[in-house]
Image (tube, rainbow, N blue to C red; front, side, top):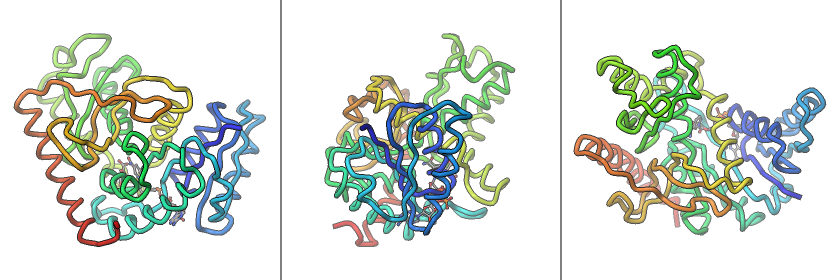
Length: 313
Ligand SMILES: NC(=O)C1=CN([C@@H]2O[C@H](COP(=O)(O)OP(=O)(O)OC[C@H]3O[C@@H](n4cnc5c(N)ncnc54)[C@H](O)[C@@H]3O)[C@@H](O)[C@H]2O)C=CC1
Ligand SMILES: O=C([O-])CC(=O)C(=O)O
């Protein structure tokens, strides 16, 4: 019986569970939350769409019962506060670090062989929190951000060119924050470099909008996004369950790659059954390298805040 669990049955967690169930790739999806009844209710509601949407993955909801998550192949952690207008992702650190630590301890207790996908913010530092807490190999604790950020990038490029986002290949590096590094040199439409199709000024504006893409939605909705984040996390689940061996941008623990150590940062990787099968190191010019270093500095600052909280052993 193949099982995926999603911890946190809020906007992102419920969306992720729903998308995973509809992909029909596992027997069971378990949705867990601390709020009594919420996960049970959402899971039941989802299961009641199975005959409409033609899937058979059984969706179960539980309140804080980690036994139900036992032997999950993949666990997605979405528990924690989302930001409100006026807040940065980093403002969530003190509340979410404690939640992610406690949740990770419970997850590994029941699913010591799982691949863990972290979604909670501030993403790069919450992935680090889960990694240090879980005690699993670095390949098995992965942060979700790059797929979401590049899907926003592609959506904006698609609007600019009046084409489908599906014709676009685009890559981003760096932390999941306003210093993220979209890479026009590694962006193309059916193989045509994007710089041949969009003027520099327009491309710069799209890159800036991508960097602030999460904040744009927080301003509109009063809380953060969930459809694209939930779908992006579900895509990572599918890549692991199906052993896809495909390229994705994710937040990975860096141990010398890109000349950086002991932090999570967005890089391209090959994703498969073992989690991160390989980190891909691409060539960067000076401007791109400077932007990556600036982004790494920003993540390191937040990491220092985390370390100062003394919640990691
Ligand atoms: N990495 C990314 O790209 C993205 C990250 N996020 C982050 O994901 C997180 C969740 O966002 P939303 O789903 O919108 O928030 P939400 O408030 O809708 O849901 C969070 C859920 O976590 C639950 N929770 C809190 N503590 C828990 C615990 N100890 N155990 C189990 N469940 C617990 C809450 O009861 C709530 O149902 C936030 O930190 C948000 O910033 C959101 C979008 C994108
Ligand atoms: O903006 C937020 O707080 C949530 C998030 O990470 C995103 O949507 O990119």
